[in-house]
Image 1 (cartoon, protein in one colour):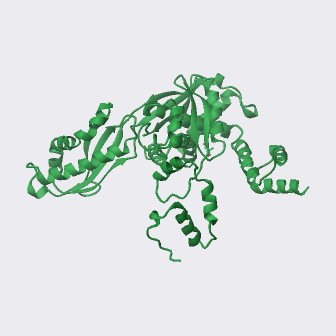
Image 2 (tube, protein in one colour):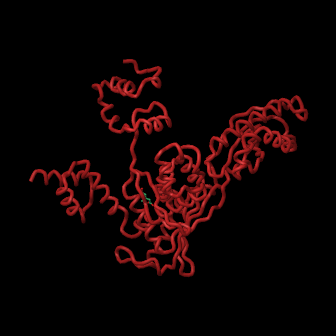
Image 3 (cartoon, helix red, strand yellow):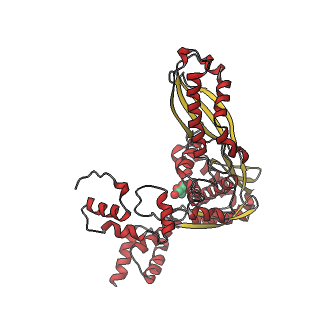
Amino acid sequence: MSRRISGFSKLSKAEKLSWLDAYYGESPDYHGAVMKKFWIQDADVQKVLDGFSENTVSNFMIPYGLAPNFLIDGQVYCIPMVIEESSVVAAASSAAKYWMDRGGFKTTILGMVKVGQIHFKWSGPKDFIFNIFEKIKAKLLEGVQDMVRNMEKRGGGITKIELIDFTDLEPELYQIRVHFDTKDSMGANFINSVLENFAASLEYFFVHHVDIPDNYRDIDIIMSILSNNTPECTVRAEVSCKVSELGTFENGMLAEQLAEKFRMAVRIAEIDPFRATTHNKGIYNGIDAVILATGNDFRAVEAAGHAFAARDGQYRSLSKCEIKEGIFRFWLDVPLAIGTVGGLTALHPLAKKSLEILGNPSAEDLMRIVASMGLAQNFAALKSLVTTGIQKGHMKMHMMNILNHLEANEDEVQEALQYFEDKTVSFSAVRDFVDSLKRN
Ligand code: MEV
């Protein structure tokens, strides 16, 4: 069989699966049998899902859970989470409950600026282009009047246009950087459409405008695209209480000891990029789960977060902790360029449902919710790490997965849970134990 196929996208789903079996020399329906288990019976829903991507042959299921008891700015939320890692939803729920009794999460929107860029090359004198830039700007804006009208009606639009000189790093290279307020939409399509229109107007200006001398008319547009670096589209979530109100912890740890160890755990993530990466990964366990559940773009959110974490040149913790005058304070500043209208938010039936469960929030409110989830997740992870370690809780959940995989019956599950209460869980240890039960 030829390894090259043309017209693959034109094949039906069943034909694609038959091709896959043949391609790998398998018997008919070898791959398809598993893939088909995950086809959705409701043809309309399946059609919607297929429409999101290309060459689809199945759906990849990830658990959808709920984390209740999130008190955020005085309002209680039950937060949908889509995640495949055990312990994450349980950790979020327990952190939420813990902080609910201590005033909950408080949030502040620090900015809502989204950014787009047009990169171009031009060989004329630097002063000239900066001097004429106000005229260029006016022409760019003139060209997108119709496009931005709706966004302006919603209170958003283009808020700043600046020319940036990169010629000291790369000869003839400039950038037009545009700031946008896209209100409740993530705004990627809007931003990219405006930028491409700007790029065409920019070219037209240089070719036709009377103020441009003939020897400077050549302009080379390299590309126009939004930036996922959104350091000014950020939100702060924080929790605080008296140290004495933190309670007592596993292994008899006192509130003061917990507070200090916790502060030190955050400090380590501030100064050591190896720890910071894991620390922030824990934050994104929570953030990504809500981002996915609400149909937002988790790659964009992660890219922005990691760039933000490295904004001073070193990769650092996104969260901070201080203990001052007997008050424990823990907070997270995080960029979140997300939307509650447009994109998948209304198209994916579960994304729509998630937003409904959250009370159909504005983009700002969703930022507050997501950041609080990130902070809750970080709190739960650090609290475990500085007290019992994470493996105990983690392995319990992991063990259930292993037992399910081994198809242990209810009695075997109970016996295994009891046996491993004080022992290290590993796949082979659990398998050997279950095998010994089955033999007896
Ligand atoms: C595991 O998915 C996340 C943690 O490693 C985060 C952390 O170490 O802070 C527990």
